[in-house]
Each structure stands twice: as structure tokens, then as C-alpha cells.
Amino acid sequence: MAQRREDMIAETQAKLIKSARESFAQHGFAESCMDDLTAEAGLTRGALYHHFGGKKGLLKAVIQQIEEEMTTRLSAIKSQGPTTWDAFINGSIAYLNMACEPEIQRITLLDGPAVLGDPSQWPRKNCCIRNTQLSIEKLMEEGVLREVDSLAMARLINGALFGASLWIANAEDPHAASIKAVDAFLTLASGLLKSNTA
Amino acid sequence: MAQRREDMIAETQAKLIKSARESFAQHGFAESCMDDLTAEAGLTRGALYHHFGGKKGLLKAVIQQIEEEMTTRLSAIKSQGPTTWDAFINGSIAYLNMACEPEIQRITLLDGPAVLGDPSQWPRKNCCIRNTQLSIEKLMEEGVLREVDSLAMARLINGALFGASLWIANAEDPHAASIKAVDAFLTLASGLLKSNTA
DNA sequence: CCATCTGACATACGAATCGTATGTAAGTTG
DNA sequence: CAACTTACATACGATTCGTATGTCAGATGG
Image (cartoon, rainbow over all chains, first blue to last red):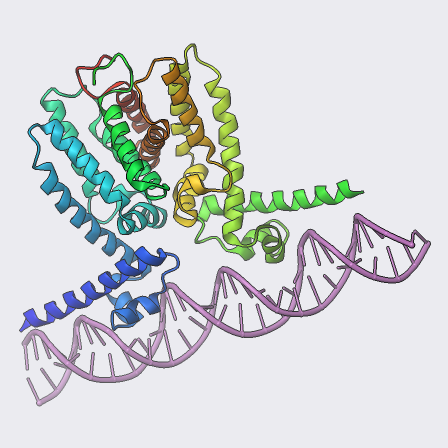
């Protein structure tokens, strides 16, 4: 029964990823020890090297899992909203909130880029930025937005939300900061100049 | 002559920082070896620990030096421009270009936040974000901008430019990407909605 | 001018961690 | 059932870090 074998392998990988997520989130990538990591999962470094090729490979797998979860959560939110614009704004705010979660911020936003480089070169095509880009293109097709390069704009938007999330997460009063950030983002998205309408 | 002593110390620290900048920029913080680092400067790890307390302390010193240089360069650019708005835009574009420089991107934008945490908690108050914030406040006083929290907006702007710089630096055609990014930033800054004027 | 002391920096050592090379046992296939 | 593949553990060497200690030049006070 080849099925049983596959299941056990998948389970082993899942255990390693789960353990790594906790360790990376708590101590950061650099301070995470592979021996502790794997022991927590009831395994040794041998399993880690076999399945993921090394510490960086494990980080890639962890990030991929987290991004998939983020995409799922974002898709659910984006499908709501009366207009495409509302969906875009709600999705952006949801992304901002997720980026404030310690696990996501630490692993995918801080350690990820530092260890693996530019997110767009990661294992699978970057889900969150891709989603933002598609929203922008849809809005341009609807004639709601001015014409711009959708990828460049998606990068700007994602970066802005990341910058804000870093601020919120380290603010003395994160809740208040979050409210200010959302307000500022709405202003930025709808126009900075006073000559623009809200 | 106490002056001579101080000079030699300053020279030693400068040599270590210079060597560290090159190593961090070329190999990244994690892959930089302190023995190689210090040997390149004609010293040993003893000097490094004595003056900077360790690897992270050296990174802090390097980042501080880089940020001071960036602030100097930005100030020169921001003092130009017919209006405050122009100065703000020119400063933002200049920041975007600087963020694309490998040394700055690698050390202060990738490794810095990952190793030392949120930039606003760094040794001295963060210069670049602070500058952005002051520009925004000035623009609000002039009545050019809508009312928003200046710090939150500065974080969004800085984050956006960082996100774009990461994209540009890794693009197949960085020059073309840079043009698109600037164009998109101008659109973002002046208003995403079509109901807004350029 | 000299004795003492402080501080800048080097050397020595131990501990932790990584990557690889090898071993083993279980499962798979013909 | 025999040969082979593979999932995973163990063993080993190489690096690198932090600290503890040593040393020598220069500052200081009499």
C-alpha cells in the first residue's frame, strides 16, 4: 500500500514544519537550533536534511505554508464587499492586520526576505502580492483606477502595509496605531493631495 | 596628549566599520565571519568586542553610519525644488533610488530589521522616516495635504518605497522597473481613484 | 622623571551549531 | 523471497561565536 508510505512522509514533513513555525516565530530563524527543532517534533536533523535539504529549505516550506494560509484568509475576505474597490480596501486592511501577527511578521516579513531574498523569487509565485496586483488590474479594467503598472503599484501597496505593520507591532499602543494606520492608508489610497476628493 | 589617543581609537573604530560594511554588503550579516572581518581591518575580534560589544553592536554602528550618510544626501536633495511638495516628491524618489543600492538595501533594509528589529527602535531615532514625517507635517501646515497622522503616513510611504526598491533591485530590467515604480508612486501619492486629479 | 594604573587590543579556550558522510531498518518491487 | 530503494538516525569534522585572560602602550600623579 503505497498510500500508507506517502501519508507517513507527509506527516513527518508536517511535524517538522509545525515545529519550525513555532521555533522560528518564537526565537527567529537565526537563533533557532535545528537539534531543538527536530527534537520537538520527535525526530533528528537527519529527517530535516532528507526532506528539506537544510535550514533554509525548511524556512521556505514554512513560509509557503503560511502564505497559503494567508491567501485562503484573504480570499474569503476579498470575496465580500459591494464593490471591487471595497473588496480591495478590505483585503488591504486584512493584510495589514495579518502582517501584525507575530508569527507572520517575524517569519515571512523579517526573516524571510533577509534569508531568502526578494519574496517574488520565492518557491511558488508570491501569493499576496499577486493577489494585490490582480485586484488592481481588475479595478483598472472597471475604470475605477488611473492607469499604472499594476505590479509596481502592488509592490508599493504591499510595502506600505508592511511598513505600517512593523510600526503597529512595536507601538506602545498597537490598537491606537492600527486605527491611525488604517486611516492613513485610506487617505493614501484615495489621494494625498487636498485637491482630491475623499 | 589625549588627542592622539582619541584619534587612534576613532581610527580603529572607523576601520572596523568600513570593513564590516563591505563584508555585510557582500555576504550579508549572517554569513559574515568576524575573524575575516577584523583581519581585513588589520585587527582581531578582541578589538571588535572591546568597541562594539559583539556582532550585533557592530551592525548597529554600521547602520548608523549609513543612515547618517543617507540623511545628508537626502537633505541636500530636499532643500531643492520650488515647492514643499516638489521637495517631498524628489526626496521620496531619491530615497527609492538609494534603497536600490545593494549596500543600503542589504544592510539597512534586509538584515537590519531582521537582526535588530523595528528600525524605529534603533540606536538613534530613525533618520529617514523622521524626515518623511517632518515633510508631511510641513505639507499639512501649508494646507496642501489632507489631515492624517503624520507618523503613520510616513511609515506607509517609507514602506512603499522599500517594497518598490526590493522589486527594482531584483527585476530583470531594473531601469525599466524604476521608471514604472516612480510613475506608480506619483500616482499613489496624488491619488489612486480616478475621481482624483493628477 | 618614575611608579602605578587604566584601557586598547590580542590570544586562548570552550561551547554551540552546522553540513556531510555513513549506517540501518523498513518498505517496495520484480 | 531477494534485491533495491528510501526514510531517518548517528557520527564526525569544521566553523564560528563569546568569554576569560594576557600584554603592552600611554595617561596620570607625585
